[in-house]
Length: 252
Length: 245
Image (cartoon, rainbow over all chains, first blue to last red):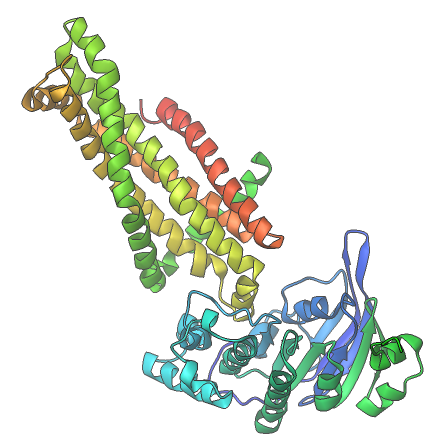
C-alpha cells in the first residue's frame, strides 16, 4: 500500500478452501468465492458465522490454517502483493484513533508514510471528508461523533489510501435506518465514482439487497450459496429462507 | 509473570531496531516526555523530600548518639543517590506512567485501533512503543536527578531542625560532599535509565497483548504495574551486585 496518485481501478479477488480454527472450534470451514473487479460483493449471514474473521484474513490481520487468497490471480502471501495492491478495511466500530482529531485520523496514512507535503495532505483530507459529507467535522474528536459519522470518517480514511479493494465490516451495525441508508449510498457512490471493488460483510438484509451486485450467504464458516440478490432470495435452503424472512411474532 | 519475559525482551529488541525511526516520531516523543515530566514532577518532589527527611530522622539520632554526627550527611546522601531515589521514583513512575501506557495501548488494542494502524501499514512499534520508550528513558533519569537533590534537601532540613540532631545546613552538605562522589549519583541515574526501559517495555507489552474488553484493560494495567515493580526490585539487586559496586 503505497499511497497517492493511483487510479482506483478495482481488483479481482478469489478465495479458495480457506480454513481457520480457534482451538477445537472451526470458524472457517473451507470458504470459496470469487469477486469480480469493480463489483459490490456482500457476504451475508447470521452473527458468529465467520464473516469478520474472513475479512481479517483478507486484509492480513489473521493467518489461515489452510487455503489461498488471490488478488488479480496473485496469492496475497507473495512478497510484493501488499505493496502492489491497495486495500483498506472499514472496521465495524470505525476504529478511529481517539487521541487524534477527525482530520488527523483521515490524513494519518499520508502523514505517517510521508507521501505528501502537509498542505497537500490538508487538501486531500478536506476533499475526502467532503466526499462523505463531513467537512465540518474536521477538527472534532471522534468522541464527539455519532456512530454513523464515525463510520463515514472511517470510509474517508480508507479513501485516502485510494484503495483498489475496500472491505467493510458490518457497516450498518448499531445505526438507525436513515444512517444505514446514508452508508449504503456512500458505498454505491464510491463504486460509481472510482470503480473500486467492494466486499461488504453484513447481517443487514436491507443493505445487502439494496447495494449488492452479488451476495454470498455464509453459515457456520461455510458459503451456502452465491448469486444475484434475486437468486439468493429464491435459494431453497431452510437456513437462508429463515434468515431472510424471519419476523416478530405478536400474540393475537 | 515470567512466562511473558521472552515476549517483553523481543518487544524491547524490536524497539531497539526501530531506533532509526526516532527522528520521524519526534513530535510524539516530545508529547510523551512532557506528559511524563509534567504529570510526575510534583509527586516526585513531595516523595523525595519526605524520603530524605525520614532517612535523616531514622539514622541521624542514632549516629549523633554515637558521636558520628559528621556521618549523617553522607549516610543520607549515599542512601538517596544510590538506592532510594532511583528505586522509589521508578516505582512511582511505574504506577503513574506505566499504568497509563498499558491502559492507553490496551484500549487501542481492544477497540481495534491497532488493527486499523496495521491495515494502513503503520507499525505499532514505531507509532506507539518507540516514542513512549524513548520519552520514559529520557524523563526518568532527569526526574531521579531532581529527586536526589530534593531528597538531600529534605534530609538537611530534618537534620537541622530536629532537636536530637541540630546539624547546620553547611555542615550537613560539607559532610555529604566529603562522602558522596559524582559516581554515586551517576550510578543512581544509570539505574533509573535501566528501570525506565523495564517500565516502558513491560507496560507497552501488556497494552499490546490486552484481550477481553474493559476488564482485560484493567488486568493489563494491574499486571503492568506489578510486573514492573517486581522486575525493578530484581534488577536493582543485579545491577548493584554486578555492575555498580
